[in-house]
Length: 504
Image (cartoon, rainbow, N blue to C red):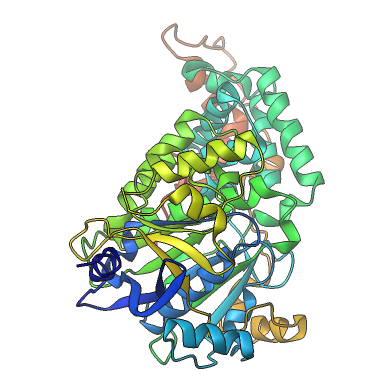
């Protein structure tokens, strides 16, 4: 058996699979040697990498289309604004027809069911919001660029708000709690569990103010987006493609990358264990993935690694999309069994290092990968995936198929019409500002002091009575307790990222 035949045999799966393209060998395309990914292996995670302009976005579109056609919901982060075309049929031309003929593809112009979302409603899409409580202190610290000490203090503030029933819905709620805890009456509240320094509180408040001044307040609030919406299928059984439109916030990369992690963490908390299923419940494409890992603390990276490792058993596959495997930490990269590597550039010494590091992430092969990776054309990639028995397939240089949907954005009018006609629009379009921590702290009135009996002196506090007990018994907190009611003392259960577990 020749080398090319051996590679082709490694992709001859018996069960359902996604078709990526045809094998390239010695400069020739072999249409009968089809390169594929087994459908059940799509929850084993993957990496789509390559330099700018090499076709990563079209690869996402190609994989998303086939997942949808097989009834698997897909989530796509549309950073550049050119993925919305997945909802409309593609347009044929000589280039598309030529590619289809080369790779033995029966190309048919097809649009796929799609929902369009936008963070906080900034831009085109159904607004996606998260409450401060739901987002949690770890992810919020990443967004606010806090250091480890400040992150720990923020966690203490969340713990306090949780135990006191102070709902942190939006930024003004968090600001109100921080301000109270640094006031004369609030300072003793955290004394027995570490305290909150005035300096740290000042940093947090300034970060919140700067964050809000950039227009970020819209992302936090209610209605809180239910990430189970991403798991829906259309009436014809095809998986819904959820497109998060991000062009309006692409200059705020840390924000949207952290929001994507919140979505993934929220799904992780709520989904039941399914083990090895016939097909994934959802495949999640995490675009511009390097932004998530930039300047991340070790604790944050550990939480990402654990989430990625464990979410597989809940039927969710995650594809990280970036320029080189070097952008992804080794512990996360080790979880990514499916690889589609587009061309790399090697113009500088750093580029050369990245190229050599990329080659080392692939199984041994008969290809000279350093030479191959710098010579690939647009729409070509080096592929290795997990076979049906979980073993890596042979490395295959592949000419990829053409997407069947529109390779470009749909026009703004069509996009707006799609958003407003969605059944979800009425549920999430209008922001809601209900009573929460801000209102409870600013409207609580100190209780009137009780008159002492005429013939008895006021009793001093018992020596063993803690300061916290004294403050909780104060007029301020008696009034606050009346406003909060049964929520006092019900601490929110939190997860790896400190995000609140949602009750559904």
